Length: 149
Image (cartoon, rainbow, N blue to C red; front, side, top):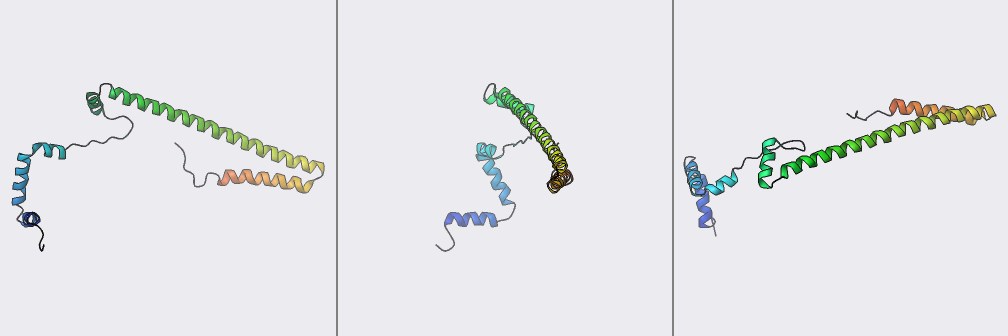
């Protein structure tokens, strides 16, 4: 069909007509179908964080009794879990730092001990190598890493 169906031509005519006709048609639609308009125009609220605003929590309780308390309890459990994970990470990093310090100290002592035994080449290599690794980790270890707050 050239030009489309009768219904499509009617839509095109409506859109092409003057701006004063469109609001009249919208008003008629709103009068005839208030339930559809109410569904289309719903207020959306957004919040950041694990717990919504108190008014929203109260409405959750209207939907299902006790749902607001469950949401708050869930947020508290999540916070406790996050704190536990952070504490474990701090302990692991601390343990790693002590292990690195101990290994560096052992390498320095081994280099000195090898030098005393007469293996100056190996002793100096171990000593210089361990100092270079420790100095390198101190100088370049934080490069590109953001501070954890």
